[in-house]
Length: 223
Image (cartoon, rainbow, N blue to C red; front, side, top):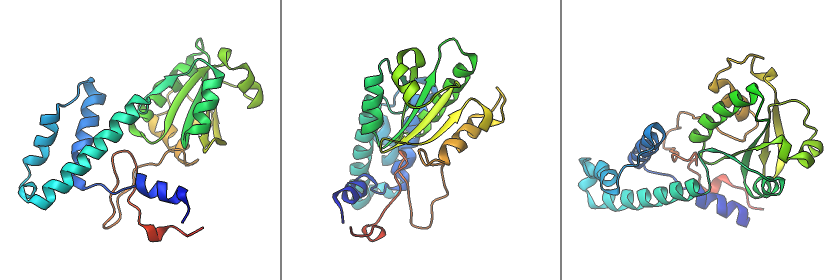
C-alpha cells in the first residue's frame, strides 16, 4: 500500500453517528447565526444520551468528537467553508496545486452574473468542507485568464490534485437563466468529482460531517 493510500485512510476515519449529529448541530448553528456552541453545550449533547453513560461509549465518542472538532477548527482557519477572494495569481497557483479538491471562480466585480454565481458558491462552500473554494477578479489574473483560455464570465473551474478537470462557463449548463438553483450548480460541480453529494449511507457505513466516508484497508489495492 502506498503512503498516499495510508494518508487517505487516516483522513477517512469513520465517525460515530451520534457524534456526527452533534457536529451537524455545531455547523448549522454557526452557519445560521455565526454563534458557536460552547464546549460545555457540545459535550452536554452527548452526556444526555442514555447509552452515553456506558464507559466504553463515552470514551470513544468523546475522543471522536474532539478529533472532529479539531478538524473543523483547522479547516475554518484555512478558510474552508467559505468562498475566499484571492488577490494574486501566485496564491491561486499555490492553492490549486496544494489542495486535493479546489473550485476557482474567475469573476469581474462589475458583472451581475458573477455576483449571482458567487452567492451560490458561498452557500455550497458551507456544505462541502473537504473542497477549497476561492475566487479571483480577472483584472488580477491576466496570466491565468490567457493560460486557461477564459473568454466568458463567470467561469468556474474545478481542480483535482492541481489538474483542471471541468469548468462551468456562464450559465449555459445551468439552464441559461439567472434564476438557476443552488442545487443545480451543486449537481453540476459534483459531476466532476470536486464535491460529493450526500448519499444514504450503506449498512454499517458512516460519514463524517466533512464528507469523509468510512473506508477499510481492504478497499485499497497495494501498489
